[in-house]
Length: 543
Image (cartoon, rainbow, N blue to C red; front, side, top):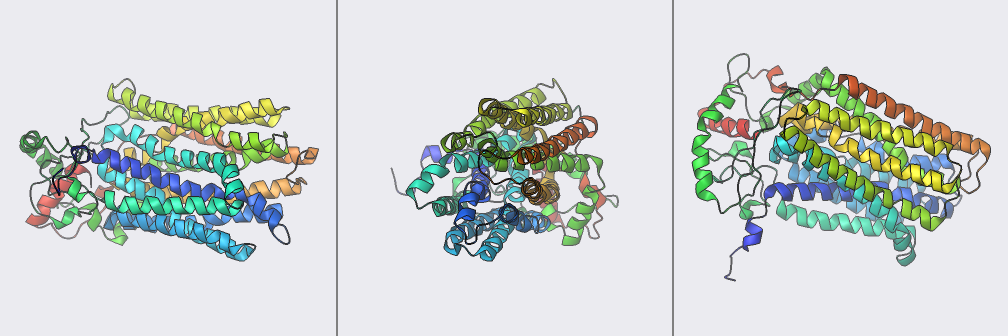
């Protein structure tokens, strides 16, 4: 191969898939850092002097979320103004570093709490960052499958932490080995990510076509006919902020790089469409709206306030909150219930910490593909597809958790546990794409608000579980007392009620109609002719 020639297969890797892969792996790495405490907390508590009680364990689990909730809104702004690449990258890098610090702290409980808070603070970049990348790169008709793959990283990460912890601990020095493995994995992700991802499509590649994010869709509307392909590999690792260029190259994920002539002709056919879309980007004073990345902090906080007055956003926030409450319980504590209340042995408990997430992943992928197919074929509206998946992913697990509370044998309890985790996968392509459905170009900001609100269960659910089980006299050893079993049942009943509320609210009130949030802002100065071209490009690609 001649020097400097990029292999054909590399040139033709669609940027669409590169963004999806690294977004998925970002959440994979993030959730290994988050959930490693679930498999190490009891060993850490038992080796401490004096040993931690249940409330101390709950505080250690919740500490991550104290940091996680702090900067969600600010991170959303930073990703919107400066691009998500480095915000997301630095967040995951520092999360990895602080995960690696944990083993050196040993029995320093205060140091462990502070380190977990800081880890959560940097991890706050994960979901707003990946969603901001999606807002730039992913066409509307692929929201379900792209989001499904993205968020599958959370559950694959959880499955790997749960399933591999016993082996890692046995070979790498106990619980400390888990922190080393997952921290190093995060560093590997960062090194590859910075060379392969850019925040914005490169507007200087004339053969890279537009993503039609600005097609407003109501509950019966369908997706645009965007085509997904690649971008110039020489630019994969370099951000190209769209309001720093002038010209007619408009970014979209179009055909692969060999299709230059086709895309050049296509660019000319899109001129009238671009003009129409730009005309729609006038505010009430008739001025062209600037790129989203040029909005002031004040304007973005104005958008945040407007989200909190928009019914469809409020429904999305409610559903996200309810999903997190119940999923945090299932991911973090259901295996503890199976082992201490139903007597599941350690090896089988490790298996059940892994296997259900494989089934969840299958359901998530199938439901994501089905959702996009149904929407594309116009069999059902976007809103009705989202509602169906949320109801399946909420009411199904709720019924299974009723079964868990009434199970008298490990077989029955394990079966209901697997079903609960598995069915919850359907909810992911149900509600997570709503941020992009509703917000479009400002979807990263919509999810920043949602993730702030939905982090509250990460704090409240562990503390509630810890308080109830300690009050019930639980000792985290089989067999538990009748009062402990009753306390666990109360924990699950609360989760069931939360699931029921979220599913009901979604069923009756959810709407995925696109909202033109930028029309609520007022721009004092008209855009120059140079910015006219920039706005044109960004209006079409959804920036």
